[in-house]
Structure formats: structure tokens, C-alpha cells
Image (cartoon, rainbow, N blue to C red):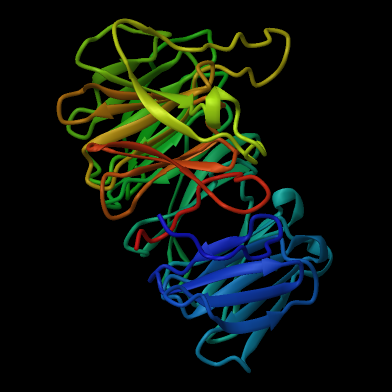
Length: 418
């Protein structure tokens, strides 16, 4: 694997354009745009303050820079460097900003979630959406870009509003049978909207585009419930990760549980391949340690044989948000694999064969897994533990790659695999 020189970065703000041709990075109040092939600087923009959020438009023609502390958003054009747009939310403040799917509207969420403001770059018109709910996944666009679903909270009840993105007119408005709505997400085909309740109550609700309740699912009661949710790329499966350490797969025909994936601390199935990361012992002559010592120890994967016990973490029972349950899960783009992480087995990544509905591979790292992400073009998984290495897995095997340069890797980034 080849690496470029080290570039300066602030707040891990570095994103590839959707078409894979450009790389945008922020260094304090400067926005730098490079060509991916040559990594030469193509554009250099100066913002009014330090940037906290950067995002490309879907057509890769515009870049949004949000400065939450000042309630400002600046939009820059890649084709017309002299053109720029400044959006000031004023005393209302700013806590979130994002693009609409058409790349010509900016959605800003004001402080205390009083409203969502929709700014048009073409007509300079402004639309307001009231009562957005402060939840982790309260805004979601359908994959085709036609509809926006927004979680709302009014009169101590949860609602969902569906808007048409072409004119921002309200299409449907309905209440959800939830105590404290935690998130919503469209299926990739845009036909079904999934909504799930707070972790204190296990409930998944599935709605059609016209607001009809298609199904409701509850696995158990009187215990911590849902922690993570993910649709398969084909929209055939909905994976629900729970605090009990299981992933339940719902099918799109009956919305019943197709299977459950448990995450025990011991792997005894002989069909499952377990890769364990191990440090390489660097020796000099006569068996003495190499001198000077390396900056970071190299590592490799070893295949464990027989029943394998994984390193577990005992959560603190007297603290909120215990380190238990399925904290992350993601389907591969070809729909063949599902990767999961059980937070009380923090060093392991579990990879499931969706076609055979069984465990396929387990990777155990030397350090807790911070994040993982699938290659958007092929079944290849990148794993990051916050150290100086990145780990790659594919059905052909896995490898540990030492990343040159100072500092640590905080998280895997979505990038074109060139």
C-alpha cells in the first residue's frame, strides 16, 4: 500500500467528493481542495472562522463549511471560485447543517432545535420547518432524493413529517407510538421508513410512504433495548442491534425475525475463522532486540485454532450508557456480509455471511475497535483502533498496514478505493 505525504488537518475534517475526484480538508479557517490523482492543491478558500463541519454537495460542485460557534455557514463553488454564499442564522444559533440531495439547498438546525431552516442557493428563498426533535437520527432523506423524513416533538408526543424535496411541501404527518423517538431511517428503495424508540423501551416501527404502520416489533421488555439499526443495501433486511448482545434480522416480506446473531465470548464453531492480531518480534543480531526501537510495533494476523476465548469487558453497573450490546453494524455493499461490534467484547469485529445466515469470520485486535467501514465497491472492510495502523479484511484474508507519520488514526473515513 502506498501513502502520500502528511497533510495538516483540523478536527479530523477531511472528506472525499462523492464522485471521488477531489479531497477537501480543513486547517483551522482554511479550506483546501486537492485533486485525488495528483494530490495537488486545486482550490484554497478562507472562511470567516474555524470550521467545525464540512460537507460536499451530491454533485461534487459545492462545499459547505459550518461554523457553529458563530452561527454561520459558507458555501463555496468548485467551478466558480469567485462565487460564494454566506448564511447567518443570527441569534437563533446553529447546531447542525447539511445538504439536500439536489445540492442546491442547505438545511440548518437552530439551537435548542427550535426549527430547521431551508435555504435555496438558486432562488435565495427561505423555508422553515418547526418542532424538529433533538435525537441522533432525526433527519433522513430517501435514496432517490425525493423525500425528507423529519422526527418531531410537540405536545409531549413524537411525530414524523414527510416533505417533498422539490418544493418542501408537507406530504404526510403522523404520530409514532413511541415514548421517546430515537431515530428514523429510510430503506434504500425509499418505500419503508424505520423508526425506533429510546433504549429504555424495545420497539421498532415500520411505516409506508403514506404514513401507514406496516409492522411493529418488540423482542423483549423491561430491559435496555435497541442500540444500532442498519438497512441492507437491497432493502430486504433490517438489522437491529440490541443491548442484550444480539443482532436480529427482520425480513421485508413479513417483518418477522429471520434469525438472531449472538456474540458469545467463546467461538467454538470449527467453520468460523478467527484472526488474532499479534505483535511481530523485531530482533537484531544474536537474538538481541533491534536498536533503535521502532516508533510503533508491527503486527500481523494469526489464525487461532480450536475453541477461542475473546477478551471481554465488564461494564460498570453504576454508570449511564454501559459498554454492552451491539454498538456498530454495517452491511457490505454487495449485501453478502454484515459486520458487527459487541461493545463488551471491544477488541473484536464479527463478520456474518448473510447468504448462509451464520458467523463467517471474527477478527480480534490488540486494542478496542473504534470504527469500521466497508469499501463502497467491493466486499472489503477497513478497521481502525485509534493507533498507527489500519486493518483490511476481505474474503481472501486480512492484513495489518502501518501508516507512516506522526499522530494517531481516530476513525476510518469513507473514501474511494482507487
